[in-house]
Image (cartoon, rainbow, N blue to C red; front, side):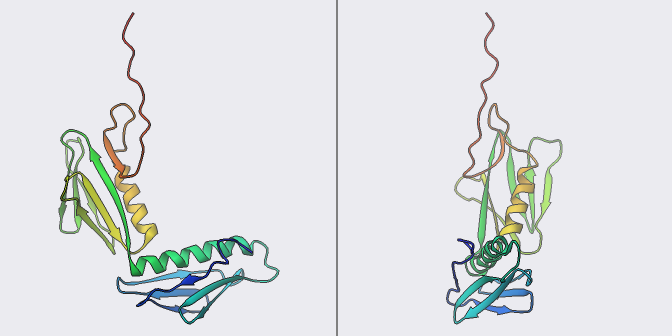
Length: 182
């Protein structure tokens, strides 16, 4: 049995789950999410406010899918109850970000501003304290991370001065510049 997969999933107050033949739908105060699992490898059960993911007997690789399914459902529960936030930081002279409706307008040193449309369920906000932080918020962990990665890819941090878009908790390995002549 998987160490991760055998842990129960506790549903917080205000979160409900519905188990179908091969889907789990979780509803909470922030929204509703679904996950499709492979019933030939695992079974999902709900007892009160506790969910269990159990491997099927004799299924090869069932422990692997048990851990995957358990964590995916746990991510849904956290998403609909608390939500997910990813923060990007703009570092560089003249780099700016603005929110225009559902779009994020970025000035990243190109000859034109770059606009990023927010997918369904994603919200952009700018950190009011330093105006360099961009918050990407949503209930789907995978979608929040993918949107943040797509925005970061527009101007990744360069290794010499560290200019560009980076995650708030990211450490950029800096390189030494050219050494002086002899």
